[in-house]
Amino acid sequence: MQFDRLRLSGFKSFVDPTELVIRDGLTGVVGPNGCGKSNLLEALRWVMGESRPTAMRGEGMEDVIFAGTTRRPAKGQAEVTLALDNRARRAPVGFNDTDALEVTRRITREAGSAYRINGREVRARDVQMLFADASTGAQSPALVRQGQISELINARPKARRRVLEDAAGIGGLYQRRHEAELR
Ligand code: ATP
Ligand code: MG
Image 1 (spheres, rainbow, N blue to C red):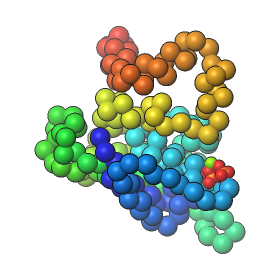
Image 2 (image 1 turned 90 degrees about the vertical axis):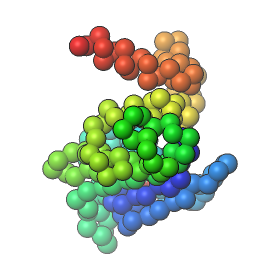
Image 3 (image 1 turned 180 degrees about the horizontal axis):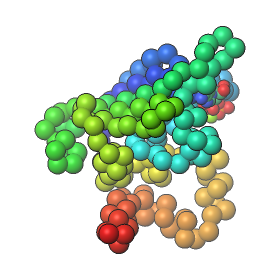
C-alpha cells in the first residue's frame, strides 16, 4: 500500500500539527542532530501498531506524548494519522470500499491508545493485521532503526530468520497461527 501523508500532533518533538506528503519514489529526511528525523520514523511505526515502548525509545508508551520544554508545557495526548492510497483495494474486508484510507492512533496519559480506520474505532490488532499483510508493519524489516544493522549482524540465527520471514511477507501468517494456538 502506498503511503500518502503522515500527520502528527503532540507526538514527541512534533508538538504542533505537522503534515508530511509522501510522494512516489525515494523520500529523504535531512536535518541536524536531534531535529526529529528518527521521531518521524517512529511515528510511522507507531501508527502501524507498534506496541513496544522500547521501540519508541521510551519506558512507557505515554513517553511518545510531547513532554514539554522550558518554553512549552507538556501535552496531554499525541495523535498520528497515516493516509494511504487504497486504489489497489488491498485493505481488509470492511475497509475496502474507499480509494483512500486513514489510520489514526491516539494516546492520552489516562486512557492509553485508541485506533481508528476512516473514523471508525478498531482494535490494535486490526491495524497491525492491515499492515502485517501488506508487509509494511510496525515491525517490518522495511523500517530499519538507527543502529539496527549492527544488531542484525550480531543477532542469533533464530532472530535473523524472523527478519527474513517478515521480509518475505509471511509475518501476518505467523501472528494468526500464534493466535489460533492460544484459542
Ligand atoms: P540524529 O541525527 O542524532 O539521529 P534525529 O533527527 O533522529 O537526530 P530524533 O532522535 O528524532 O532526532 O529527535 C530527538 C529529539 O526529540 C530530542 O531533542 C528529544 O528531546 C525530542 N523528544 C523525544 N521525545 C520527546 C517527547 N516525548 N517530548 C518532547 N521532545 C521529545
Ligand atoms: Mg536519528
